[in-house]
Length: 393
Image (cartoon, rainbow, N blue to C red):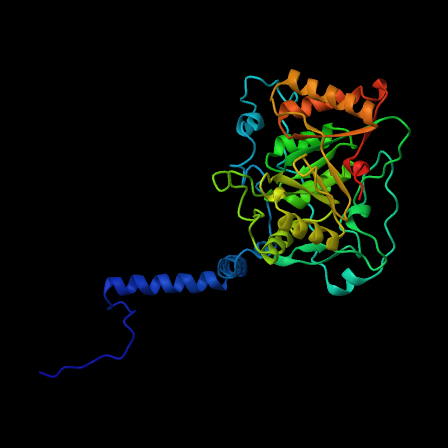
């Protein structure tokens, strides 16, 4: 029997039913494609699909822009602050009244940053900024000619070619009016956003503020303080007598360290921010008793054009830099009445000697009582002054 093979397409009447249906479907598709409206819609759909695939492959174009948020609510290096600090900062102490009515929120505060200094700018002789108003903000930091590149991408204070120093440029201007002067340093700032902002915004601008070097957003805090007229100190953690049980952090200045190690730690601390006019001690009961350690410390500050204001522990130490020591700590006893008593004794010291300097920590109760005390100081015949007004060589 002869077998023949047909070369005709299997779409005729004799083809299987499934193949006839496939042929009909193909004919309908071709006819639809020939319709101009359907063709345009299909082209638009393919374009959108291609665009979506392109975004998936290349990523969101906005992701190239950096988004930086400073987590100020994360408190670092606070385990060695004075006893009772946690209760004081969180308002859990039964001795304290609430800090201020309402909540203080820093989540939307725009923190400023400064570009790294270059050698040309750091060494240039620039005109000093216009003098600050008695009640207005202090000039923004850094001031040209007063800084140079430091470790970790930060900047270090330097003496300008024309002799200007950070101790002069960043201090709050002050004119004595003949009345006894009273100054106060409030320290430990930057560790707690609520109390830091309260101190900056509610205390008189003559109150000097000192900041912990480990604070997150440190430069932003200093910028904010200066914009409210406060001069600023940077805290240098120093070895206490009970170190290492009481450890002020990884960059603690140790009395027995070699001078080069002390200078290296100091340079890291000083490069954390700019705009401060001097350093103050944090702890340091052992460090300040060492002649070698304090000589190294003082000479390093002199080379950088900085002042040194201490909480009273280094009152017997002089040196060729602007210096002042607190006459008393106002909040050793963390209660409103006790703080008021210390402030009255500070006034009495100023009346007897012509000036007095006090020191306190950024506890809510301290901020409240200092704010109330300062409001009536002028009426009691005293002049509120920044700590720099007390400094002398």
